[in-house]
Image (tube, rainbow, N blue to C red; front, side, top):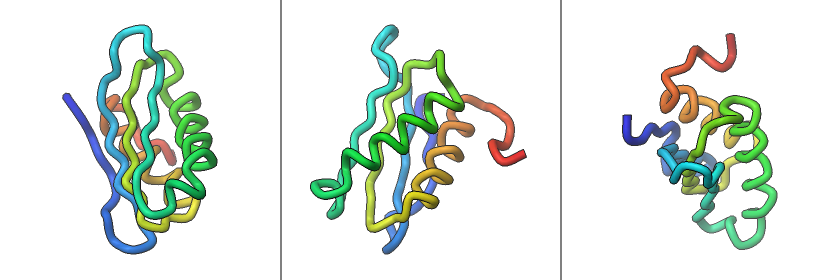
Length: 93
């Protein structure tokens, strides 16, 4: 699979897209959207923590298009996108 995504670009949501990163590059996180200048670094930390928990040995490229999502939404969308990308089991089971 080349990429997987979860979420929408509706208000109070985010669209998280996960794809492969170059081998040895680790996880790269890009945040775009209206709240990125103000909350981008905090959002990156949330996404990186989820990626480290779910796929610690994978090189991932994660892109987040934010439209005002709360951290709980960002976490859930990131878990779903990584799970879809890795072909893993339900992250909430």
